Amino acid sequence: MSSTAGQVIRCKAAVAWEAGKPLVIEEVEVAPPQAKEVRLRILYTSLCHTDIYFWEAKGQTPLFPRIFGHEAGGYAAEGARLSGCSRIIGVDLNPNKFSEAKKLGATELVNPKDYVKPVQEVIADMTYGGVDRSIECTGNVNAMISAFECVHDVFTYTNLHLLLTPKESRIKYQYLTHSFKP
Image 1 (cartoon, rainbow, N blue to C red):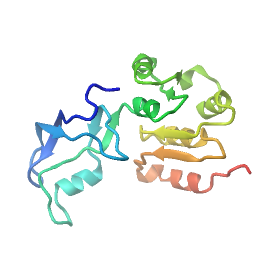
Image 2 (cartoon, one colour):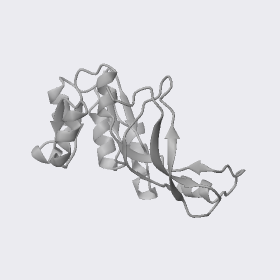
Image 3 (spheres, rainbow, N blue to C red):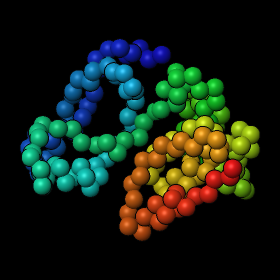
Image 4 (tube, rainbow, N blue to C red):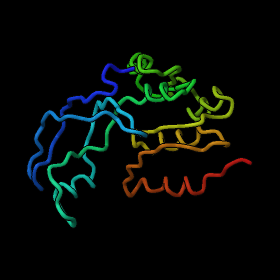
């Protein structure tokens, strides 16, 4: 368990003090997670078009100061371990990330480049039909499809962070038409 569990922590954040003005990097205090919340160590974050819309205060009552950047990438494996997952399979194209993933709770690691068949089939074989839960957070359409398809047919829960451009909107159709075996 983290040494900061249950404690207020200090982090750096890009704070918007006024509409359209430059963001200011400041130290902020973050309260401990409440019920049904988790604390993640954020490694990278960015602004999406919705953040920019609200930063420019278009079409709504301005609310400042505020912190944008919900497009974050961080560590989730420890939360999965703490919640009782017996197997946590990390998937990444970069094997350099695997040692850190193991430290944070991943029990198995898969690099899709190491296999001829699609990674969702590899995971289905490893887990006798698929996983109970799948989390995809890269925003890559092919990774989203793989995450969705590696969940077994009994439970279909995939947490996708959908970041779609018009040309990628085909994923909506693919998910609506995905067939499930009885």
